[in-house]
Image (cartoon, rainbow, N blue to C red; front, side, top):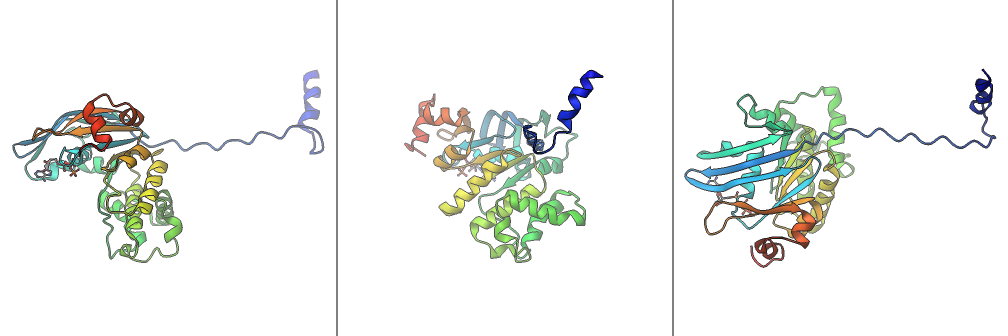
Length: 290
Ligand SMILES: Nc1ncnc2c1ncn2[C@@H]1O[C@H](COP(=O)(O)OP(=O)(O)OP(=O)(O)O)[C@@H](O)[C@H]1O
């Protein structure tokens, strides 16, 4: 009882009493939905021609992994294997395993659309539906992957996806205009918004800035850095400065003299650029070939 009487005056203290301000309660962070992706001994063929040989790499959740290397060494093929697009090419075959959060995406019981929903893709050339409105472009990915969103929630999803893609402020007053009315850089961010609307856990990007001017490139890079907290990113790029700027880790692919592509070296971006272990990596990142 005597403890209570001592405590009460403090609890009732008015604003003029010299009591410290209560500490602000920090906002509860939204848990990240990013998932880790692991490739193990992935090989690929087009007909009889082997183009990738036993490629293994972990792409950790919430990180940006850059795939670098000269033209034709299999980077895009590897990227397409990560979301089951490679198998759509006539005559294409593959071996090895790809695991999303530990689950084999090629397991017999897994559906193709499950992989597509969880693992989105943004291509080299911005490909919005030109006649479709900006708003409908954002929602288009839902139809394609069979994700259902109630009508009442669609406006919020459009705003959220465009905001995450760094485009909302530029287009919020013209959502009904066609996607083709946007600049190339804006179209690419619209495509990123379209992918994000499906709430993927991984986003694959195949040279997403190669058709963009330097300013648009920097805006897309900022977008990549921001969304990477919630979406694991795997990006193919020929731009070494870009790989350096946006990625946490890099994998250097090489296909020497008609042999299938392999990963020569992978590791943290700093180590690949500042202290590569293989001379070929050093030559490539320093622009001596490729
Ligand atoms: N649809 C296809 N049919 C047959 N061969 C293909 C096909 N797509 C790619 N290839 C071949 O597979 C190899 C790897 O190509 P891929 O596009 O994956 O390389 P890349 O490293 O992404 O090249 P780039 O940097 O030029 O885009 C190349 O020799 C290419 O010619």
